[in-house]
Length: 401
Image (cartoon, rainbow, N blue to C red; front, side, top):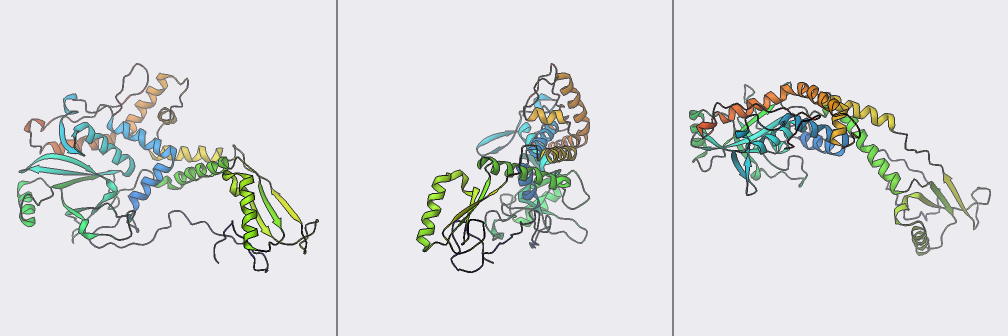
């Protein structure tokens, strides 16, 4: 069947039809095979899909933001490490604290991170956190080892349906041993052509790639997003009742179009969806006959502001649990809804959540230690990369990085 255009009328003279259209199921994926990489879910677009899902849900986005803040804390406990320059990006200097922020953000969305390392000789001299959705593992060998990371900005085909293999950036996986680096450079040709190495780390290793923190509650995040869309639609229509207007058949298309134009002007541009016009002939009792009458039917609106309260509470609770059981008070803090909440309660919640996030935070600390133990400045080797925990609440000054 062809789709219904609500701004046109059916002049066929036949019976009026009612068409029901099924809504597309969310997360209905198309199988996509890409040669040369290990696909990320069957459509190879899992990271992009999870990122959009988090950004569409206010609770998920707040939860990811709080999780990121507690992973990055107040920077490194050794404050002399925070402001060392470790690279340049967009013509700006990048500090170790900048890298910490980006690593924490990548973990909060994807449970993993890819860090591209540049070398001077056999020592690391520059860092860049690559967008997680751009990175894929190269094809694995017989012992399930992948020696390459492929970096490309259109795996999800957001920028076009065609994958341009000439734009794939193939980078060697992290292995800073001098003999390994020498082999990689010799294979490429020259040091100038060599792209460095990519250090990657995932918080879980049950699968080849990590699952996003939002994955167990993706339906809840989508539900919250859809509730927001629905509320917006109702508000834009001003909670107007719906009407169906039955009108006798028009003689010409021009006459019908003119009537539609007058109705739109009468209702106003924000309420076009509040009325449907159907052609027909009927009497004043509602029976369809040949005649010249107009009949208007009212569809009662059964939506109220309490309708989705239980849905919202349950989805918010589930999303908080998926992010290491974030206390509600911390989400309220992120959303600036605390009101008269005591600072002591906020501090206790912070201490609890620091315990909940201690394992991934230690993982990040180990990443910095491993990379900087190969840094070109020997003074940065064997340093303490402990992250200073974030405490919110009474008499505590925090740094929001």
